[in-house]
Image (cartoon, rainbow, N blue to C red; front, side, top):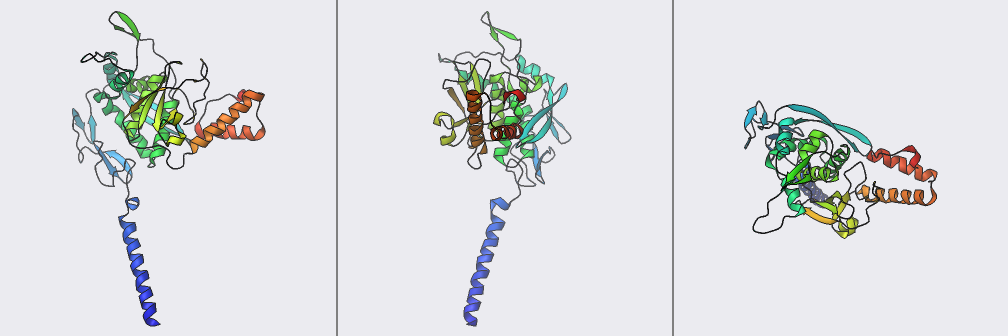
Length: 341
C-alpha cells in the first residue's frame, strides 16, 4: 500500500513539475508590451524600448536609422518643425479616453506640395488603389505617424482593443472638406489630404479619414481595405474579420469613418441617403483578423439595426429599446439627438 502511495505521489509530482515548466515557458506568461515586444528589449519600431509594459523612446539603446537627428533619447526627422499639440478623443466600451499628440506644420506643408496625380508607367492605367497607396506609403509621413500607433499600443495590450481605439479616434476627428484645388494638365481637381494632414488639420472627408484609419490598422497588424461606393461617391474602411460576419462575405467588416458608429453597421443615414450598392473592395496587406473572439460589435450593430427599423416603422420605440439605444450611445460614443427616439 505504501509503495502504491509513493508511486501515486511521484506521478503527481511529475505532473505538477511538468505543468509548472509549461507555465514558465508559455508565451502567455512572458510579460510583453502592446506590440508584443518582451520586457527590456528593443521593439521592431525604432527607437522604442519595452520597459515595464510601456514602449518608450530609447535612442541610446535602440537605433535611429534613417532619422536625421538624435536629441537625448528621441529620434527627430527633418520635418519636425513648428509643433502643434492636438487632442484625439476615443471611446472604448463606454470609457472615454484621450491621446495628446504633437503634429508638425513642416510635415504638413511638405505633404501638401506632393503632386496629387500619378503618371502611368509602361502604358498601364493607374487605379484608385494606386492613388491610395501613394498616400499611405509616403515614407517621411510614416515616421511621424508611427508614434500615434505606439501610443495606442501603450494604452491596450489586447490587439482588438487597439483597433477599437484607433477606429473611435479617427471617427471622432471632425468631418470637413478643404477648399484647395490642384491643377493637373490645365484642369482643376479636388485636393486630397494625406493621413498626416487629416491629423494636422483635425478634419477630413470620408476618403481622407478612411486613409488615416487604414494606415493605423495596418500598423497595428490588421488586414484592411478601402470600400469604395461609386454610386454614392462614398468611401469607408474594411477590416479583416470572420467571413460569416463580414460585408457580403468579403472577409472585410464595414467601418464608417465620418463619425462615431459601430463596426459592421453600414445602415447609417447620410445626407444623400443610405448605402444601397455593393462597394469596390481595394485590399491592403495585413495578417491579423479582427473579432475572432468576443466580437460584441456584431451583435450590437444588429440591435441598433432593429431599433432603427422599429423607429422607422412606428415613429417611436418602447422602453426596452430606448434603454438599449441609450446604452449603445454611451458604449460607442455615438452622436445622436434626444428627439430621434
